[in-house]
Every structure is written in C-alpha cells, then in structure tokens.
Image (cartoon, rainbow, N blue to C red; front, side):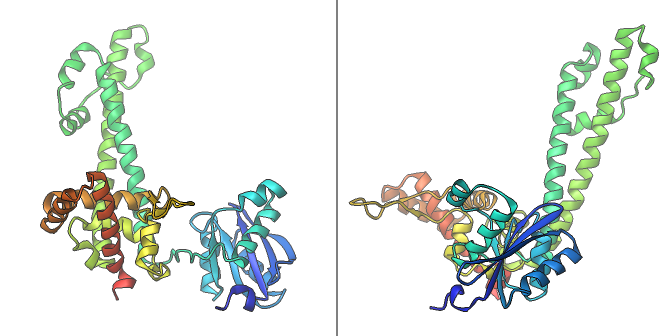
Length: 358
C-alpha cells in the first residue's frame, strides 16, 4: 500500500484564525521546513500556497477548522487543485508536552496529515448544499428568536395590570399575538406620565406587548419564507431522499448538510453511520470479547434526525412494525431496537444521497 510518506515531498499545515492563518511546512520525513503567518484574505491564500510550493512538490495541506475559520482557505486551495485534508482535533499529548502556540499547532496539523491520523476530505461548501445549510442556520436563528419573543410576551402578560391581564391571559398563542398587535398605548412618551405610575405602567405594558407581537409576526413570516425556499431546494438537491418514509424535506436537508456538497467524500455507508453517531464502538479487552458500546460522537443533529425517522416508522411503517415485533420476541428492549433501526436507516439514507445514488 502506498502511503503519503512514500510520495510526498512537502506537506503543509495551517492553524486558522479569523484574521490570520499560521502555516507550517514539513518534508516527508517529518522535518520542519519553515513556518509563516499570512492574512486571511484572497491574496493571503495565494501567498500561503506559493510559500508552501517554494519548498518543493506540495502533496497535501492539512487545514484546521474547515467548517469555520478555515472554510474559505480550504475552498480556495481545492479550487486551485491542491489536496486538502481536514484536521479538527489537535494532538493533545503533544500539546501537553510541547505547549501551545500558533506555530506548534500548524506543525501538528502538518504532522497529522503526514502520519495519516487525519485523512478526512473537507466539505466543499460551494454548491446547493451550502446554500441549504446557510438558510437552515438563518431559519434556526429566527426560530429561536421567535420562541424567545413569545416567551417574553407571555411573561409580560402574566405580570400585566389586572384588567389587561384578564383580557389576554387565556388567549392562545396566535390569537394573543394578533390581539397585542391591536393594542394602543395611551402614549409612547412614557416620561410624561411619571407622576401617574399606574397609567405609565399600563402604557408601558401595552407598548412592550405590541412591539413583541410585531417582532414575533415578522419572525414568523421570515421563517415561513425560508421554509418554503428550503423545501424547493432540498427537493431539487435530493428527490430520492425526500421520498423515503418518514424523511421529508426537513430531515433530508439535515442529512444533506451532514454529508456536504461532495457526499462522495464519505467512502462507505459504515463511514456515514459513524459520521451520524450510530456505528457501534468496539469495547473489548482481555477476556471480554465481542462487546460494543454506544457512539457518543458524530453529528448529533443527524443522529437526532435518524431517531425521529425510527420513531415515525415504528408507528406507521408496517415492515418496521413487523421488525419491532420480531426483535421484541427475541428479547431486545425498545431502546436496543431503536439503535438497530437507526443503523439500518443510516444505510438507507447513504444509498439515497445525491452523489451516492448516481
């Protein structure tokens, strides 16, 4: 088997930050060739690449945090034909022994690529899935803000002046929002009522409730628009995935984001299962053999999506219901059956990812 060390002349490593990236280069024997800091800009990326190539034949570049600070750099390097390797977890033993600095981190990134302890291909972040991810992040933020707005509104209603509270406290959420939108404070110049605390309290409460209702309404409209766009984009990106029982556009969008635009980087369904945190982990030692434990790592949002699908199928999918009955008769608990189902569903999801299905 040919390894990186057999063919590489120079391997780069980059410790990424918001404004600067620190790069290190090592040869195929692990000897440090040099290190340098570059600005996190387009010209800086070009200078970093040219600097590494100045040491010889550049075979691979390890980049830290390719999902955040290193995303633009990884995208630019890939566009220019470089082999980029995702390195997310530093060598904790080396950090404990040698200390922590940008230079040391960049060097450890390069050595992780050289030693093949890091081999993952980063997400390309340059296609429709990246658009879906961006919209999902925006919608998630809006959903949280909408929830905060309605919770704050409910809290103010509870402590409102008695007459106003009695009028609003029993209303359902949307009815309450619509009613608060129609509130008319006596005045918006609250300091003018400072000599009359009760009137000022009532006016301030109405003003606050109206503003919160407007905020909730605006966020609700934003969420609806984002959801509509996401439904179209997800269906366009993965029509086969959307058609699976219990999946739909929401969960399909999560699986697309987990896999990335370049889903082919995930080399097998077992790798996808591990990425989703549903691959059993060996836990054998000595005379204890064949034992496995739960995987607590992986993309927990994807893991949650698999759980939702499993629950839906256990209720409304006849083949799954038959499977549950059979496994229950064999002595498995409901929790164990769900774990088995999640692993099976991960295999099915992987087979229907866009680049895998084709």
